Amino acid sequence: MSEHVFKLPDLGEGTVSAEIVAWHAKPGDVLKEDQPLVEMSTDKAVVEVPAPVSGRVLTIAGKPGDVIAVGAVLATFDTSVATAAAATVPTATRSTAVAGGASAAARATATAATPMQRGDGTPVRASPATRRRAQEAGVDLAAIAGTGPGGRITPEDLGALLRNPDGAMHTAATPPASVPAASAATADERPEEVPVIGIRRVIAQRMSEAARSIPHFAYVEEVDITALHAYREHLNRTAAAGATALSYLPFIVAALVRALERFPQCNAQYDGQRELLLRHRAVHVGIATQTAEGLKVPVVRNAQRLGIRALGHEITRMAAAARNRSARREELTGSTITVTSLGKLGGIASTPIINMPEVAIIGINRAAQRPMVVDGRIEVRWMMNLSSSFDHRFVDGADAAGLIQLIKEQLESPATSFAAAGAES
Image 1 (cartoon, helix red, strand yellow):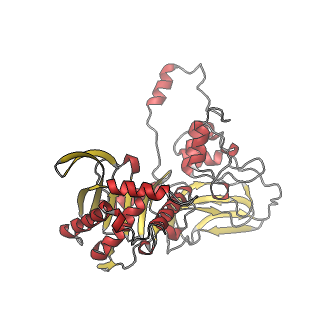
Image 2 (spheres, helix red, strand yellow):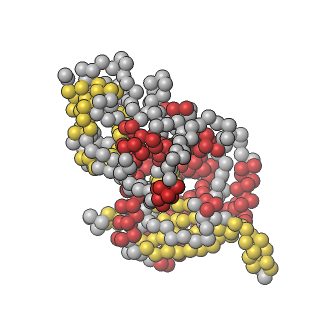
Image 3 (cartoon, helix red, strand yellow):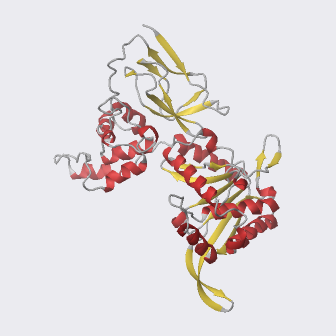
């Protein structure tokens, strides 16, 4: 036997450890080189780690939720095993990674429709959340052609199948008639145990730390975007074929960039260890993006150099990359100020939590038509609220209000405000 010891590599940016999210193999499985071995989560992203060599898995280190240090043994392989007829990874492997404390029989039932490889031997690529959703619906992921990078099955791919009544899908088996009704009711009443691991654990830790250590100051202002609404529709209507449709977001980012020229203390990061406030000249805007795995913040770098259309394209591209997990690690770090929006679900007001180590976050609420008093008359206007939070240690209330008011002024006069920002570029 020829044994190969695989240690957790440096996953980038000085990472010293990573958390196991899910194993794609177990001891005894035969893998080919570069076949998915394990998914690891850092505080920046979830990384799929492939097998470094071809061979039989002898040992694996840890279970989902365990933290492994860089340089520690992650798995061992017997490389003397022939891999010409590498076996399909058993489905029970995935059940062990996901089901947590459930019984072995229950785990096998929950994942029986989720093979880890297709019939031609290629791996089924999907996020843990997508796999879990497929397991709950009894769907065979191997039957879905993924549209993501490398054939990865995206949440949208699975959702399209679930919404298609004519689509071929397997449903989970119903309990046998012999099961007493009382037993079924008891099982239904049992709470679902969901391990807080991976990105969800990172989110929980970062949100707790931010809320605990930053004295948040909230400021809410309403903005009349009637003119912006018409201007945006005009730009979309006259855009070249294939151009990215503009939402309100690129206009808000452009207004923020210009406002930060007057209030640079809001485009900053606090280095607590050195007790230094780092004011940035470049504006790297984090775009808070909801994904199937939780909230991610892809970064639009040097937003001050981009026109409206370029901002719209970049925001759309980065959000899509965050959702389909194709975003590179460097595209998910380094923001100097964050913009967060719930779109049509944005409500009237919110109190966003600052994305440490930044000192400000701009929240966008829902755009809606409201009756407003204009020059003594009641008119129907398009209105939107901006709900923002600031680190009160470094941003005074007057400066926070000044920043938002300057953004408001630009959004309410778009034709003059954004011509210089390159609406056509």
